[in-house]
Amino acid sequence: MAHSFAHGNHSHTQKKARVRGGGTGGGNDRDRARRVLSQNFIVDGDIVDRVVKAAGHHDLVLEPGAGEGVLTRALAETCGRVIGYEVDPRLAVRLSAGTRDDPRIRVVRGDFLKAPVPREPFAVVGNIPYAITSKIVDWCLRAPGLTSATLVTQEEYARKRTGGFGRWSMLTVRTWPWYAWEMTDRVGREAFRPVPSVDSAVLRIERREQAPDLPGYRAFVEYGFTGPGRSLYATLRTRHPAGPLDEAFAAAGLDPGTVVAYVHPDQWRVVFDRLAPASPGETGESWESWESWETGESGEGVRRASGTGRPRRR
Image (tube, rainbow, N blue to C red; front, side):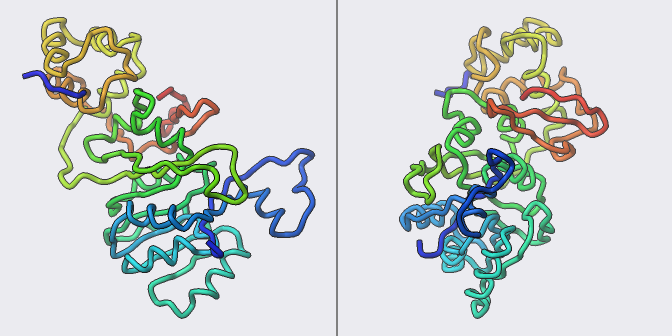
């Protein structure tokens, strides 16, 4: 059967910025910190409320880039405990002092990417440093206890990961059976101070309740994206007979000429399920074993596998 797929206290984003001449420019310490870390603080309370609503209730929340704590405090009102990570010592000290009497909040001065993974179920919520978005997403996907991640990211990143341009990234397709990706909201640049040069969005990644056992799926998707054909059909035809492949594409409602990036993740699953007995198995690596997902200027990722040192497009 064919399938149819038709704030006085401000949460902030940090990213390291190169300053012309190698310096940090003039101004006071606060201005210099904002320039070096590209701190963009949310000043729209409605946006904070929408992020908290999108995140939902959780017993434990980890927040990257806690800033001065507007999102931290808002999360504490709806969640059990919040652990806020802040690399800017000035902001970390201020937030720690301002929340020391609140048992729901703990502030950690340090790098979220080095945070120990909780053994209990937890969520990640934050207005994250845009320059390390891919690294934070990678950290979240690796964490066994993660239930969801609700992140304020650049709008372009969120749209690329959720099919917003009609295209799907390999990362999204590879993880789709285990994680749902959704852009829940758009955040205009005017919601931040200083005003950034791009708009933002709320990206939600939620672990699915049922984790399917799909040996060979990730290798199948990787080959589909990186193989010799421009279309998914042409690539898979190098490994599968035309008859079964035609049946799989018909079941998924796919035109054989469809370019690989335009294949919906659900369609990938249908094609895989039809071809699985004849598909090569996993090579011993899974997405958790990749060292990093690196983002280039185009926003597309370059992945380096452990021990190979060879980048591949996604």
